[in-house]
Length: 348
Image 1: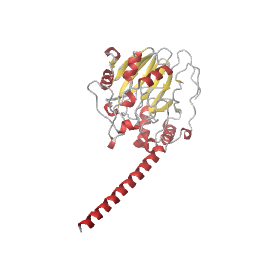
Image 2: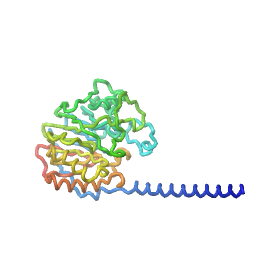
Image 3: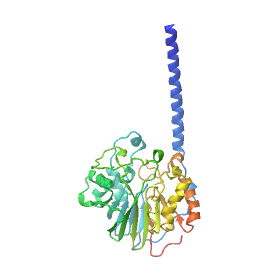
Image 4: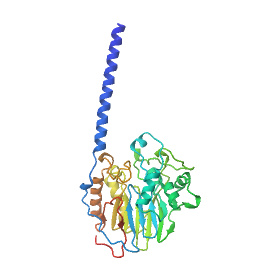
């Protein structure tokens, strides 16, 4: 009887192992399929941004992936965020310690002529916005302007104290002909049950290498970048405070759409109203729409299941037609400077 019981138990265990293995394989196949199912840029029927001659005094912006933006008027450069070292999906899933990639940063600074950066301004302090700010500041002598959490990231990277500026909301900071104002905002509620991923602050210097979860949000900002020729509002994350920027005016809005699909169509409309309609902007560029796990320079849309950018673009078109018909929508092209404020505005 005992032998029969043992044989039965062995057969049962084998069946369980086989079932678990089959379920795992099916699950892995499903995940792999979802990961490969990505929308295509060709499905977005927006016109290319009109070209304009780059003349003295014009302001350009160059999108370098995620929410990294380089503003340049020929004399002074302002860098929003600074995310060139790209941790892999495995680094994120397994909480592997990561740090800035010196070779990549050196390449980017040289390739895109970042030799006049006066200020580096993270919209918040998650790794995909602030991971490389210290390494960039140490190579350029640029000031880092941001929250108390941003300050601790800069200190952990060994940035000299005279290059670190703790920002005050609604205060104007001048860099050459640029005037920058950081306005308190909030991160999009894209975490579990409407939470904020990696929320909280950093209260001591963050010394890399460290897991990506070590870079805490630390407070978010809407960043208004004004110049005698025009103004741009940068909203890096898809969060907003109702009425917070209603007194600001901007010609251009760089509109973060990361995980916007998961927040829903109704949320997206309110988001547009608070950032675009309120500021009376006439040009809108979505940002934070690409897969941040890809190496720098490899622009690819994330899986549809995570954030369907084509669907978001369709939403934005419909919302624009309802609220701001004169506004124009453009997808930024990686590494290509766009003239924001030429003396003679290009035809839209």
